[in-house]
Structures are given as structure tokens and as C-alpha cells.
Image (cartoon, rainbow, N blue to C red; front, top):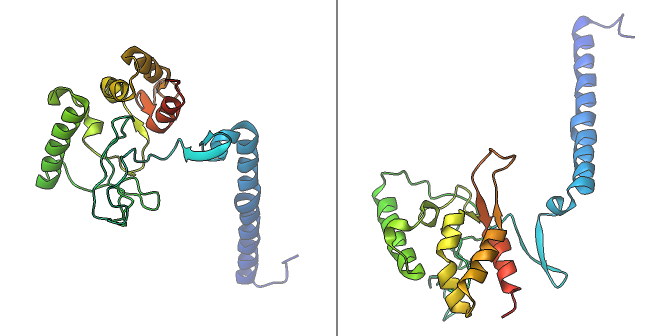
Length: 217
């Protein structure tokens, strides 16, 4: 077909055909195939791992959020959020766009970008350790590391089982529930390592608190 065309033009036409072919394969066929498999085999995950309450989506198990007491002045964006003792608390978050939503702002994602020797981070960790220990009624030395530092995205909903169990007594007391009942709920929400060896054991705070809210008094 291209026998009588100049070599340079034949090369350009061949490159154009390859471009079109890969555009169809990688830009149309592959995305449609992956989307189809996801919808058929992993419908819940493909929809965003939504958590529903009475048939209505209320959260996503992939995105952390605040469990705080109502602000004294809802219009005051400078008023810090106060953790609600009736709920399990997530790890700290640096995802704060400064628009009043506080940490875990769903419109913002990011880490603090502070190094381990940064004086500001050292001070913040010490303050968090004291605050978490007082809030949960535990020894400051026992506070897990993820209660003191934010995740890379600032939206990670997972904490360690150790941090979840640390909060059991406080949550049970605030809700007037037997501590063993709340501890069993935590145990039911501990997820093992992915494929048995990737990552660490974890507890999704969003899913845990959703189940907590459904516990009969």
C-alpha cells in the first residue's frame, strides 16, 4: 500500500496506525473491560465502598471523617473540633483546607510534610500523646503511634487494633454499654493483612462506628 510513498511518510503513517491502535486498546477496550469486571465481581468496591443507613449512603469505608462534638458557634471556622467520647476516634489528619471543615476535609488531601526531627512535629506529637492519654484514660506511654501522626493522604480511615481496643473503655462508659460488648464489636471489625502478608492488621473506624451506632442500648 505504501510502496510508492517516501520512506519518511511511510514511517509517519505506520506510527499513526500504532497510535490509533493503542488508543483504542488502552483508551477504550481496557477501561471498559476493567470497569465491567469491577462492576460484576466487585460491585461494592466499584461503587466506592459506600456505607448505607436505612438505604441511604452516609459515608465511604475508604475515607476517614471526624467524629466530633457540635461546635459552639457553627459559623466560627477558627473554633477547633472537639472529639466526641461516644465514638471511636480516627488518627490525626493534616487534610485541613482551613475552611471550617477541620481535619479530614473531603475536598482536601495531604500530609503535614514535617520530618521526624522537625521541632513543630515533635511538639505536636507530645501534645497529642498527652491529649489522647487523658481522653482515653490510659498511660501516655501506651498510646499507639498512629494516634500521634497523620497518614500520608490525611484521609486514611484505618487504625491499628491496639488503638481501637484502647478506646473501648471510654466509648463503653460514654454510651452506658458493657465494655466487653464494645470490645467484641472491635474484634469483629479487625481486618487481617492483605493476602496474608501485605500491610498490618487494621480496623476501619468508619465501619466500626457505623456498627456501633446500630448497637441496641
